Length: 501
Image (cartoon, rainbow, N blue to C red; front, side, top):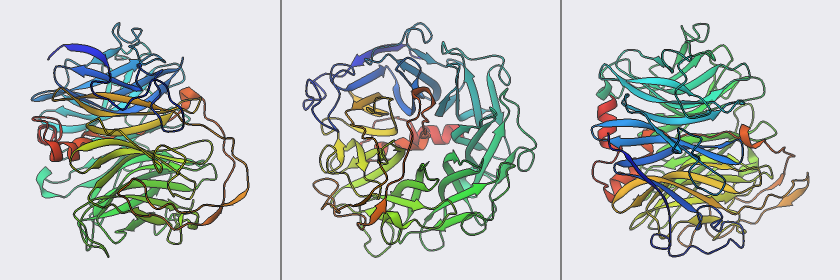
């Protein structure tokens, strides 16, 4: 295992467009690392798949270091200015030197400890796991078995996102293979563990819910509604297209909630080849999900991939607040847009992180209005684009003062490294008024108009305490597009998918 090299504060050498101070929403915040970008570099490829606020205005990210052919859980914690928080393992980071594993998501608990979920290799089979860390970034041996709990079945299980219930129970979503891993017989998996890391056999079927052979796919994200319902999003095999988007809801006991959508699921190909990667709940209980449409079919088949925004009511019907259909693509010209994570602000705006690919792959953060249209007051036509950076942002959240944090992977000197950016973001106290939003002409300079404008009532919302802000992690598949487009050697997706399965 290679040793940690350094925390590198990104400079104008890699970010020539950085300003010395932010002036408006969407500008890089130079109080974060001096430029608004902090890179945690290692001698091996690394990336952050989830970000969370941490008490004391600190920032926590989790992900992976790939020490080929193994992967190692990576934890980084930063102070408010982007420097390393040495109260975390003495150096500001933890790298698991024992297990071959990838951390995909994180939740910070009230006492400063935190739990992560992901995939670990056990007996040469990928296995869903949950691990607990102390507030000093050490593995908590009182949790599970030596700090780890896992669910293993058949030919492999994979953990992609987690959420913690009010009673401390931990829900992890991902996928399971009932047959050999290369057969495409992949099923949505939802598991639950006790707060001490014991599989909760009262949940679902002996601790887990698995979709039927009619819903072959994977869950990418999970949230809890006010009634304890478990809502997940992801993709399954489509009828016409290769993929269809899926949103499902389970009861607190792990069975399908048949009052949601159609018998517990909303499944739609959205005239394309979509996958939903992230979901969030509005203050009024309605849902917003984001993802990416592939290049297959539809009324306008294209060589490019597109961001999709889907709005649903609490009952799983399409929400007309987001246009006539309740969903829409952000079509692009000569660019592909990948949406990886979502966060809803207290003033009813929608933040989306991901990447845009044309000649290179560059990180992006979008700010959308309540109805899903780009917010032209943010950055350039609603989109911050790291034009001097290579990589993507796989997770996004917001600090208590409104500033945006996004984490992912950024290329430095030919190697992918953990990258965290902070952007200015003015939070306006929302009011219940009827407003009309005008649809702008584009997201970026090459993007056509997305959603249909609509008149909507913006609901009241409350500010979430910093240490309670959720983080939606992106699993190891998140770097797939980065590898495909600019080939960072052995980096992550190809090797890790095979090694962990």
